[in-house]
Amino acid sequence: MQNKLVFVTLVAVIASYLEYLSQMKLGELFGILQNVKGSGLTIGKPAFKVFTYYGVLILVLPITRYSCSLEQSKLDGDRRQNLRSAAYKQIMQLDRKYHSHISSGQFKDAVDKALGLVTLFNSLLLDLIPRSITLAFASARLYSMYSPWVRLLMFCGFLLSMVLEHRSFSSAVPKAEKANRQYYIQESQQRNGLQGWRTVTNFSRKDDEVKQYQKEIHTWSELLESYYSTTSMFECLQNTMNHCLLLFAYYTIMCGVLKDSDQMDHFIAFKGLLFTLLGNTSFFASYPRTVVRTLFDANPLRKIMELRIEKDEGDTLKVTEGEIVYENVSFSYPGREKKVIDGLNLTIAGGSHVALLGPTGIGKSTVVNVLFREGELSNGVVKVDGKDITKVSKESLYYSLGLMEQMPVYFERSAREIIAYGKPHATDSEILEACRKACIDELIMSWADGLSTKIRKDTCSGGELQRIGLACVFLKKPAIMCIDEGTSAIDSITEACLRAHVAEFSSTLIVITHRLSNAVKMDRIVYFGDGCKILEDGKHEELLRLNGHYAKAWRINMGKERPDDLKKESR
Ligand SMILES: Nc1ncnc2c1ncn2[C@@H]1O[C@H](COP(=O)(O)OP(=O)(O)OP(=O)(O)O)[C@@H](O)[C@H]1O
Ligand SMILES: [Mg+2]
Image (cartoon, helix red, strand yellow):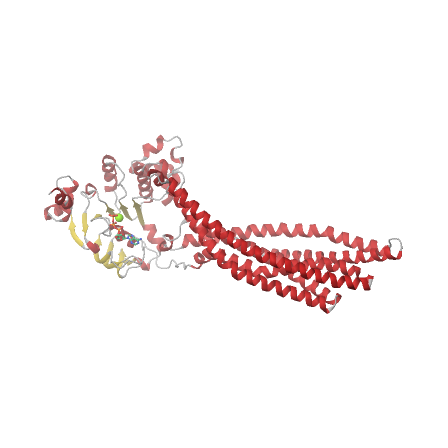
């Protein structure tokens, strides 16, 4: 890679130098021809010699440029690939807390925009370095060829060009920033509309969504227009100034040629060099703007790349019993003052099946989430088989845990790939056995492509997706399994069948459910109140005898009692 970079830069420098030489030779040739015309002599050897020299130069030039662009395109591909894979590696390794703030669309935008860095790097190798060298040669040559006035003129031109570019830069960059921000707004408007297309349709809001998008995109194009009008105005000013300088320079040289016709070759060479110089000066002057713009575009990815990846350090957790202990645990979500868990003390014996119940929003899922080390505890410790889970590697922790949530997120892959995700080399018979336990085997085998059928959220029912998710955790056979409303979309008969299979588990099992029928056969039911305070703890029959919160919830679940609010309303 390093050698290739040196090679490409060297070839670009050579190509640039050949271009400069060809201009000089052309000037020389015209000078000779002018002398021949004036003296009436036939075209002599020197003219042919210079012509051949010039011809060789301009024929070698495309070949040099070709070999340069060939290598450069390979390097370009490598660099793009490296940037994309480094960004993907980073985002995949980031902690859960970051993933809730960065959507896949935002990440893709950030990567796409940052690819400008690759182009910038190319222009550094293929433009900036070679052009600087050419500029140095051309300036030295001009310096030796012309009067101090012309030199001064060139210098002033360069300075003025820089000043103008600086002005253009300072007025254009804030506009570019605004346009960029608006770009993200219109993108997210479009993405939300597409992602939520069904919701938009069901609420008859298509026209509103389209109008809003049109409004955002209109604002974006207005901001872009304002940015481009500023930059083109300065470009026009720059060009006008350059042409004025050119006129002066030509005038001075013309006077020189009129006095001494030998200066004709200088005139032609000057013309070529001047264009090289003018092109280069505006390139150099605009380079800082290009750099800042590119860095600005790369900012979102830079921020992602700067996020700290926590090292997955700690001992390897080897779960034997599967005992879980919450010791005086307190937890609140960032930005929210309320403690969702406030001093929880709970021991779940290894291999036991426990149901966590309580009103909605009380913190049941949070109790499971802290077991997955989601967020930091404000107090206390969670232990698995006596080991503080913050002291073991996350990799080994997740290996021992299995989680099935209400809305399992699926990849758009085949049923086989999804179910075997937790056990990558599982055989089809193992997969089908897991499907049988999840009561989804018959359905999958009835599909034309069987296990090879691609699963998509919109082509499977909610209950089917949940059962596929269950098959996945069943196949993984984690030492500790958590099912958080994982059967909420499944009918009661299939759910009863599932319950029978789940009851066979020897692993520790935590079930969070609002359907109390799922808790009846559990070894233990824990009923949470505010702050995840344990209000009741025991078996189904014991809690019914207690006649407290659980018994009341049970009666309401069975339709034997009406909730208090409804009682008040009916009074
Ligand atoms: N990522 C989060 N950031 C901030 N607050 C959150 C987050 N997740 C949950 N909460 C809040 O924490 C509280 C407990 O949420 P949790 O999901 O644990 O409740 P739950 O008992 O599982 O409810 P449900 O029965 O409805 O599933 C709620 O008030 C919720 O709004
Ligand atoms: Mg929940």
